[in-house]
Length: 222
Image (cartoon, rainbow, N blue to C red; front, side, top):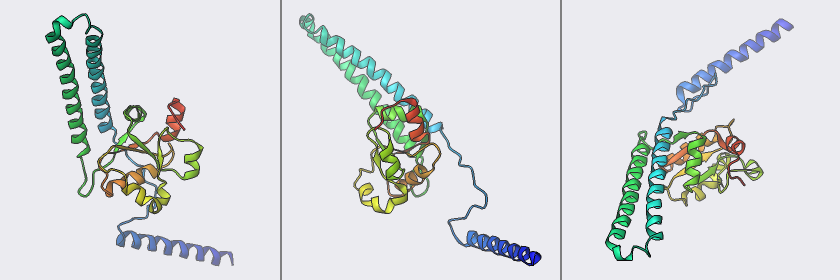
């Protein structure tokens, strides 16, 4: 009796393996027999972070020059030509810096696959830089997790209920920057970001540290 049970179990396992192999050969969505470790490339995020930091540095310098000129305006009214020159230099610095940074962001964001622009993987430091720039964060976790705590200002688009939120996503401007996250131990942010990319969003960033790293860093939260 025991030998017969073992034989039946072996037969069932063989059938399952054969069905799985046939499914993988015939379906574009393959069933993994062994979990595959995801590989992330942070090189683009590092380049973008340097560009943002350079922009901030030059903008701060430009603002300092402009503020100095304003404070001294009353005492330098007789020298108005010089004041105007300082303002022009300040505005030129801001304009040139902004254009170069936007061109860099555009060039990096255009590294696309055949059908859509691939989202960029980022770490905590770059996520905070984008947060300080007031870009929109999107929490891909379920509503209960979102309500328990999330990054300040983040909107909730649960990946597991994506069909119910398609209208909300389609109402968002597709040319703007969005940062998608979940928690450090989940992958739904990756799935949501790629789903959005296929919908036409072309400036997507995946914050892999997610809510856990953000909370531990003590950054603004709801």
